[in-house]
Image (tube, rainbow, N blue to C red):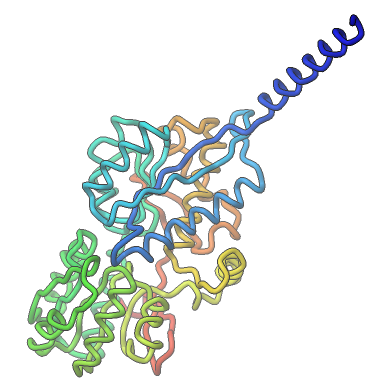
Length: 387
């Protein structure tokens, strides 16, 4: 009996010891929030952002994340906001209260501006995937604007479109906040260059699936150029339907829409002839971009990554490095303070868009890349040649 009793005590002690060791060595979990469109017309856009984040998380966890002497596992908590800023605000409250997220990534300006109302008060970092200057101009001290400001594109887009097609411009962009911000910057630049706006006819890119009536209204004003853009899929439908209705002019495509994804809707690049927009990632010939495209295709067979994928991938990697530099996964102020160092410390393989750092307002720095469609093919052009 004594032997049996001793064996039971030994077994219990071993089990307790193993449980203690397991607890001591277990990774703690830190969660990064996501609130973006995962349904509706912008669902593909939101999925691209989320896939970039998830790819980064898988790489970080495979390598191991150690902060302040503790090991952590990163997780993404994703909530659908249907591109609605009011939903974004509700989601953020859930993410902070239920999941204790020190950072929340939002891929649209309306949602980003909505969260800036109280993110400093609630002490979480806003990772904002939008290029509108207002996001950083507000002076919010807990914001990272992931892409460079879109205003750097405006002079080049005006010069190319007006020089190639003419001075009459139709606005046929989306009716969401980001497209409105682009319009507010583009319209005075177009008019200052001697152009004329013949019609302003924004459309509900995120809700509609047929744009014939809106496009017909825009074309009735006889434009030489159409200013368009929102998520890539509806933007592609606008182009396709404009060509079907006989439009022969050019398109100015805001940076939210990606030419390669538009081409999948329009049946190739030919319908985009003469268009100007951002350089598609899959058309980027740099070694780091090519390597990233290869890694993404391996992780997501049959799909091509867009810049939404790569830029938000980089943002998550930079946030993890900033946590390590700050020695904390919870102090958003300390993490934000180390983002510039983190961005500069990124290995080129984790930074396929070659972001150069973060300025004092929280905006990333980079040389923007522009492309035009000529003879049915993508051609990169230097911004300096179009200004």
